Amino acid sequence: MISGDGILAGTLSIDNDGAGLANSVTVLAQRGSTTPGNATLTGTASGDDATVAGQPTTAWPPTQGLTLSNTSPFTVAYSRSYDTSTTTHSPSSSGYHLAYIGSSWPPPLHSSAVYQDLIKSYGGGLYFISGGYYIFDLSSIPAGATITSAEIIYNLNVVRNDPYEPNSLYIERADQYNVYTPTQDAQGDYVSIPGTSGSGSAMLPASWITPNGMLYLRVGWLGMYQPVGNQNATFSSFTLALNWIHPTPKHQTTKGWIKFPNPNIPANATVQSAILRLRINQKSGNPEFIVRKSNVNWPIAVGSYANESGDQIAYVSSVPAAGNWLEIALPPGSIEKSGENKYCLDPNISSPPPASHYVQIADYDSGGANKPQLVISWQTVVPAIEATAQDAASIAQYGLRRIMIFDPRLSQAECEAMAAKEVALRAWPAQSIRLSTLAGAGISPGQLVSVLFDEVGLQGSYVVQDVSIGYDSAGNAKYDMTLDRFRPDLIRYLTE
Image (cartoon, rainbow, N blue to C red):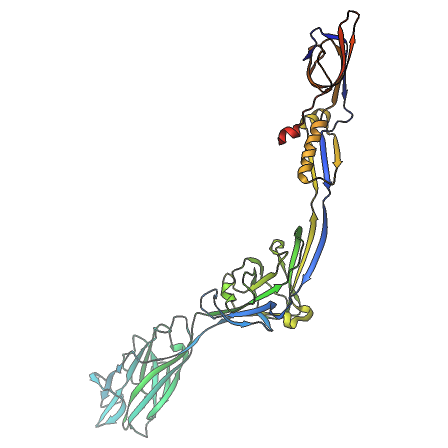
């Protein structure tokens, strides 16, 4: 301890050298740089693109594959279709009405007489008119079905037929209220059939048929003529044949897969953009499809349709006209830099499209210069190796003073360590002391000493640079020395 308690002899000088002050130190080993790159990739073999048509189903979306194609044309499609059915229905109920009987024409309705025949005749001074009915339960036809044809198929037995009378029977549309009501002739909409024995058929208007409903028919001899002989017939069979279209559509989609080879992009490169380019050969309707980053194995098989579950990376809602390129922007982060890039064009969107559509794309086999392309651009990045350390207190007192140290041999960690060390050494002015003192016994160069001179505001730790000894006239030893401000090696302290 060297202090100012009366042992200072001679002189004391203090020097603050701020010429080398640096409170912001940057250590640089390598400057950062970027190098651009690009590639246009196409398939390398016929099997690099393929399509699979799915099984038609009323559920959405379809889930099972049906047919594989790895030859042209490459088609992504949606089709909507409706199943058709032909069904035959027997009457759920049938019978005969009360008869009209009387001696005058037209005869009145009898109160109780029911004949098991279709009659319009005159004999024994009496007129007879008798009709029947048929009821069909059509609850097996789904509501909303479209009836394309309705046909009565029958076998008619004519027991008696007066050749001088009109020779036709009617099949009349009725309803649940009047189907049991006897009539002397057709009262509304009807079709006619010949009054001859044998098999026959009659087409009914499709409007008569209510899917999931009932059909009510009345039958009898046609015409309000006054009979002079006997007309008598029965149906031995009377059935209804319907052709109809199911109300629920069936959906079928065709998915497509495209594969591109390894682009060999450097590992330290950053992909800037990626464009999937497809040449349109044909299109119909308004095609829409999802672009998935495919997760199925190659070669594509029928099972690929069900197994595909890759992430959606793009959505195509509009396709240009034939002869143009469809360009689809893909997320740069989706690109495999050192592996194959595989995509599925999937028309199984969130809900069924309103109408059928398709798009045909130039593929590897037929495309030539127009085969599918994957266009990628990237930048290869050489990162900077540098570090900057600052002393906030020094900056506040002296302002920002920067220096840069360049050493290409250093790693990032070494740059950081050197910057911290150098700013600790350089952030404050270097201070040195020249003094003469009587309290120098035992002091030698390199020694760390504490100095305290309150009178001049000097205190702190210093390193002895040199010492010389002299004697005064009284024979007392006097020590002349140079001291430099001690700066601790903060880097060593922090790392040990």
